[in-house]
Image (tube, rainbow, N blue to C red):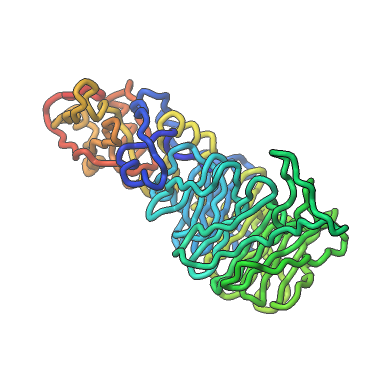
Length: 528
């Protein structure tokens, strides 16, 4: 899963801008980058193919999908309303009309090693739900937002209403609440239907002992819940009837626009007479809502459709349960079931979409009718595919997650992969940005003659800088590509073999000054 750029600390510049949202408190600054172990230049960005099983084979002529990127580890796809993000080799990428990009801009604000699901709508209602907190995308970064009270958990977040997003939150004691997590306030918020506390014989529950109240407070069990909403204000939750020591049959709760109370009704019973495993809700209109998942053993597809009046079961030719179901902008349905991809245009029949050899599908997202992204596995490794035609030799080779997490743990930076759009060559650390004794800003040398022999020939056009991250000063160079960065590090290490340097996907926090390559000697790691 996703790993963040920095350890649990707040950089000064960051804390000023988001302290109100994140509750951020300055901590001790991290040590200089080159005091930690570094990856040797030769392995700064591991690019070897994952294995022979993941070697490019090309897509068969009848498959619309081509491999965009390969990784030794799985890709995680997070479709939201308005966008989709993919966790690729330990970094987040925003999928768009261009190629896959590793961009520092998508990772801003994740400072504590957070991992988790990404839910909601982009940009105003996108959330990262981690095990130890919740983070909202705010303007141009992730900011910690105290969404939950003690012992609460996020069950689901769905786009809803007029550019809003709503969260279903499990509360202690078999209780649940809804909370607006995106968009303008001032709207009537749905509420879960309260449980009937009356016993079948007409009596009432005895008062539980202190701290032992586990009786259901709501009709739907606050667990294993899936949620879907419409721009017109309808909301749909599917789950299971709440029971004190477990759960009952599959039910659905639906709310009309501007209504606090919804309608609770059972979902259609599958032919196997087993409760279905619910995996999602696809709401396309008030008269076209589908709850999907799996049922029976062996697993078969479960599709319960609401036509605005009643629920009924839909048939599908899939060879297993439905893992993903979504709709393109032209109305075409796309589904992933038992590792296969299916689509249905208009009111037509389902048809299976051919995949490249050896590919097992996991999740799908149609950005448009003609541009569909797919996460999958092949030979035990992760692959990211797209309907755009891509030559097999142009597919990106991404490093394993442990290479990325190892670099983050040692250097607080991401490995620069071939997908990086902000490649940065870190050469060496100057020292603290403030004098430890006086607290005054450290004076930066005006001449860096030791660098001059490095920036010659084809590297002469590069512009080294002094970066200030609020704690330390670093000498680095933004470079146009991974290839140029490697050439720069090779030239630098030839002149300075004992220093630690590396290539990161990083945008400088603050440029203290541009470096002018003068004639006064200035050994790396030493002040003038």
